[in-house]
Length: 245
Ligand SMILES: C[S@@+](CC[C@H](N)C(=O)[O-])C[C@H]1O[C@@H](n2cnc3c(N)ncnc32)[C@H](O)[C@@H]1O
Image 1 (cartoon, rainbow, N blue to C red):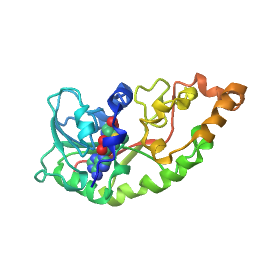
Image 2 (cartoon, rainbow, N blue to C red; image 1 turned 90 degrees about the vertical axis):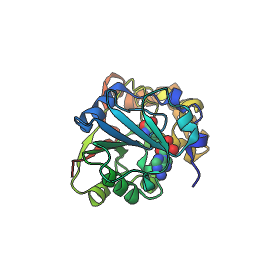
Image 3 (spheres, helix red, strand yellow; image 1 turned 120 degrees about the horizontal axis):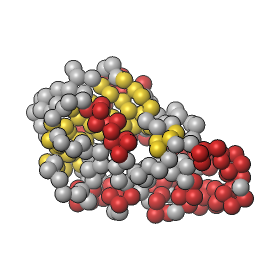
């Protein structure tokens, strides 16, 4: 299995820094866990401080971009976790599950090695109330193919609590919806390059030309300008928490 993020990951750590408000939501959901497994860890974003973290990540390029930390890093895949049963107090997987070849198996593995809660940050593929999807309809089509429907998490993990994670207007993490109040940012190919969905779509020059024209003419602001005074917005991101077994 190749690691897609060996190519997407170049420059990842600079553009995809953890946002402290989202980090606080994840840390709270992890509860009092002292040992935490981070699956699909990327460059280490959102790993909680003050706990013993073990990171699992398939891409050598992403591992190379980790900041120095005390975390133990293992190169590997969610679907085959090299740990004994019930090894960790809690586990997390942030914006990664849609990349897994077999999410059912990956989550079963997380459940097997984790005593306490499992915390997943993901995206609701049924969510449509985000203006970027109007400009780039291919994004919604892609989400339907790659993002697990929220209902599947209960099938895979048993009872789960699902809550919205609103995205702050100045979100530090450059994921797909991060720039909802900074629409001009989507015109920058370097920012789009850190978003796997734009990578998957390929050429979006027509879509970006339309956005550029609407921003220049004032059409974007006429329709969506009220967003420019919002502090945070629900763009479809969801925290899925499976309690301790
Ligand atoms: C969007 S990045 C998220 C990284 C990190 N969790 C973060 O929030 O910045 C998705 C990560 O999932 C990893 N990944 C892809 N397939 C995986 C698999 N089967 N098991 C574990 N991680 C995987 C990729 O290599 C990549 O680092």
